[in-house]
Image (cartoon, rainbow, N blue to C red; front, side, top):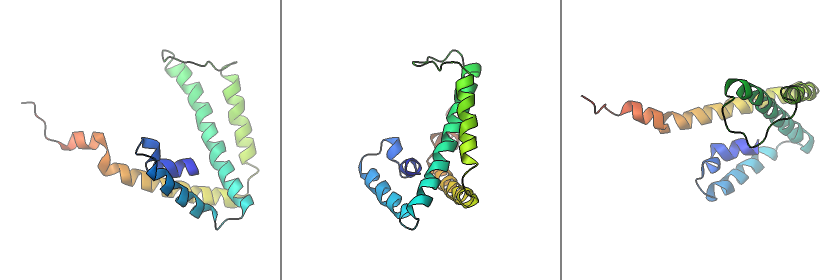
Length: 135
């Protein structure tokens, strides 16, 4: 969850180390009300779901964009990423239902913040809003 906070406050976009300090305070504030076990399970669900997304993306990009340069080739493609997806989902199924609810709430909060922040600051939105200079 810390990586999500880093991106939401801008540290992931190269805005400087001062935002990382702010992100650290936010991360500490998130974990304080939770017992260590629950905080660990909440972290597990986020990391495992992110790993599922990465494994699926590896498979999809290999077949949809075979022309992309790759510095590392996944062995036994697509078996290794598919096994990664399967084991990650298997591990997630052992988490308590409360973790799913907490994850869904934090994910929704993150989406609202992310889209709310980017709605007015998007370079594409700025380009669409500016008047056309062509006759």
